[in-house]
Figure 1 (tube, rainbow, N blue to C red):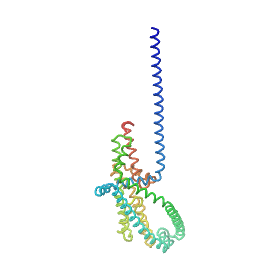
Figure 2: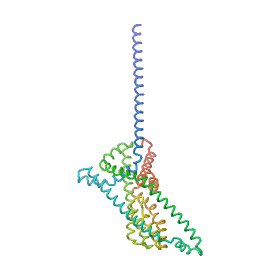
Figure 3: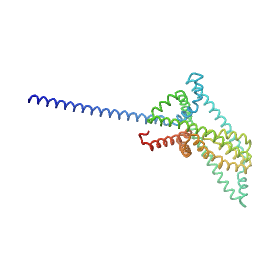
Figure 4: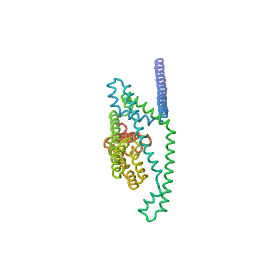
Length: 369
């Protein structure tokens, strides 16, 4: 009996020792697994940060390429079905876009050069003190001294504006290599986004850490906001150009019909607007002696034409994209200085995505996402 008891105790101790060894090995393996998991996550985060730093100078260019690719995708699909080559279709579209862009820049440059030359020649013949004196004489009985003071102020202002303009032009020339590189990245990205857009879209959707319903809602909002901004730019451009044209006819600008079509065309282009037409026209009219209507056109452009965009665009884009006008306005104004032209799309999209996530969180917490 004592031998049996000792044998049982020995087996029990051996079993307990084995269990302790297994438990110790499991603990060591768990620690190693935890360390490995954190090491992988840390390495992954480092790669994300480094990748962001690498592409940071080109984020706006890549976003622009992605938005243009989405806009041009129906044309790409039409070409690729007939050519039976996605690569060739993407290449043709990129070449066509480059040709259209070069043509637009050439047309705008022709207008600006001609208008700038006419403005320069008119200013050379301009007797600014006499014109100011005539204007002030309508409101003041004795305006010679006031006219001289106003003339000095205007001349110093003009000199300051010219100096700032020269500095701006110098900065643009200095940054021209960066601008050219950005355009190259945009068109390079446009080609690959068109060619591999469907597969890339599916990969991005799969990587999003949300339920399928939220992913579909995000993509739906992306489409609506992008289409809304494009549609809004065209409609607002037409309205702004027509409003500017009304001013050209009322205030007897030279060739008002031609200027109206030019204002409509330029108003559709982002970040340009009809001021590029009515501002030099009003200055030329003043310089040529048509002071009264020139000043009225200038005031009309500043107070009416320039404010139409800020009032109508959020309403049209918000209605088309089915989002709040406040989100559109704040998103566009905030996104523009951060992302450039693409900020008109990205800004409202970021805010709307955030509001969507907050709404789901409010309804069911983090588990609802």
